[in-house]
Image (cartoon, rainbow, N blue to C red; front, side, top):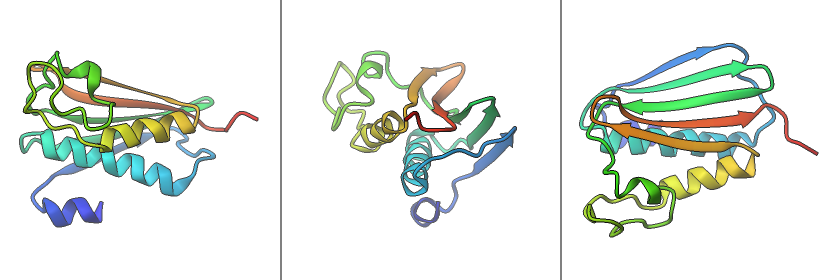
Length: 136
């Protein structure tokens, strides 16, 4: 979060949490995951507030990062988790970089999944589901 504040001090990031959100994760990697998702939301959010929601439910935790900025173009959505996805689809000017690729790798390494939804009406939300305990 410090690096986000340093680069974009005007950014508004809100946190909402409920339930038991504790789990057995690599805390450094989880911090990197959250930082990557928030930095992406701030960068592409068009100055809208970013909301991080954490919800613990049973044996999993769901994290969602949302912004109300312009939607990710539909032709780019299938590629957002690929490394350096810039240049894919008709909207080639939409830079993706490595942050979302790294975020997906961290999530998969923890046995979870990550999805994205994006529309002009609803904004963009990256949703991560992580098991609280690592399977043996």
